[in-house]
Length: 59
Image 1 (cartoon, rainbow, N blue to C red):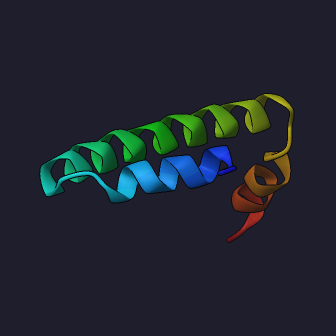
Image 2 (cartoon, rainbow, N blue to C red):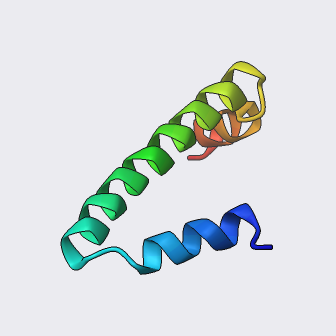
């Protein structure tokens, strides 16, 4: 029995060139959205405060 990831990989491998291009564009956008949400969550949680402090104190 294939894992969910293996099924996805098989499906992606069978896409036409045009379908793969569309999928890649969609996937890139999804990744950026998730990155943005993670940065926002980390900022709210104070996880990036030390970087902000360091940037403000550098000459």
